[in-house]
Image 1 (tube, each protein chain N blue to C red):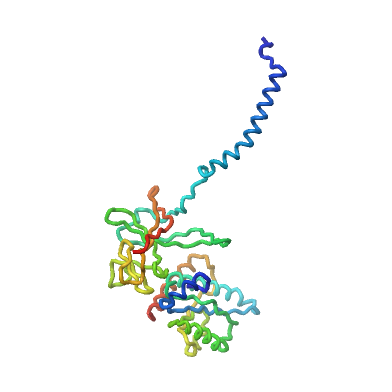
Image 2: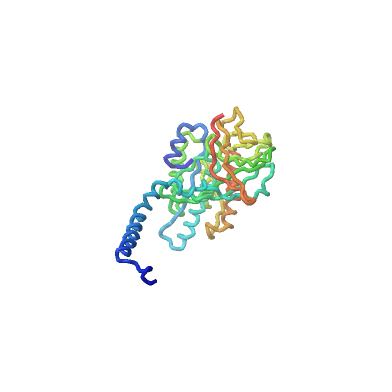
Length: 168
Length: 151
């Protein structure tokens, strides 16, 4: 009975060699496989989405929200304040517009000019945008206000990158 | 706009739109131990202010490099300030604003060729504190209203 369980010298050496060889092969292959499938493993940068406001706060009237992001410019790391005008449109979709005038980069205000109560107004050169951020022809800006990517999670509004909408 | 490569490059073709220059006037006196901290704080505060104003109105305001001078030599400095202003006017900038916490300029206001904005600053405090932040925000808003009144 004990004879049957006995491992012969040959078998013992076989097992050990296979085991050690297997380990070595795995050690060599693992990094190679990792290189090959690297793009799959890469953790997806969430586009720098930041929580900005609770969705209950968002009304049909554009409101100004501010948040900060960490920005790295070469070796210079800084905290940059970002601003957005956020509201719900008629279809109940959330719209988040960048407040940076597409003309020369001033900060636009909602309804700050009494003559244009339903437009974004740029104090620098009188640039105007309609509520959906499209520039009013005949004023200095040549493109609509960029729109922020957004998502809603657990009742919070997250904003990402501002996307240009091209000249119009 | 600021005195950087990127901004000056953008400024040149758009000159006609950027007609206002903001020069921060910053006093300092490295020989005085007791004034040093206060002056350094006011310099920081000055930078926070001007940066804030520049960011909101970057399409119309050009933020000049800091004009630094030895504390309490304002009278001697008048000519040099005016020289800065006349150089900027060659660009041409139509409106010149001088931003300072140094009350001694008030006396020489009429000799300066720009609009002096003197703001009673904070003597002490922390640049990070919420108190300072709300102070700066509140004041910066009013200063930009003042600037807009000239446009």
